[in-house]
Image (tube, rainbow, N blue to C red; front, side):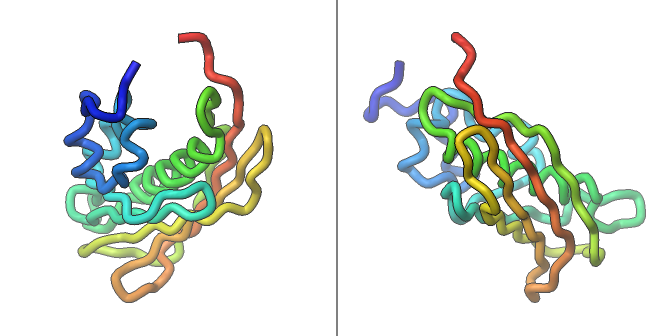
Length: 155
């Protein structure tokens, strides 16, 4: 059990990822996940209704030198899953059951911003739309994720 005074084992990771301090108690035992760290995802806003993060293009490209389509989906699923987890609340968990994306425009450098907006926040399902944009605000891709909300399995 954690208290509000002892930093969890992932405290530095949470700070580096931009996770607001009020979320550290929730994520302190788990961190943000190795893939989030590896991709360079940094959170700017976090709530069930709207979650925003950035991700560098550098290091996340495919062979042609543009942002990998899978990187778009990683950013989208990360944002949608964190938003759904916040909606689920203590004692419950969000499990992704569907994710899909449409890629509109390529990007070969800079930073991508993903903005996740709730479409439906229900008792057992959540659906979020995630729009990825470049530094000029141009839409790069649009994704949608649905998460199943269930009680936590016994630990």
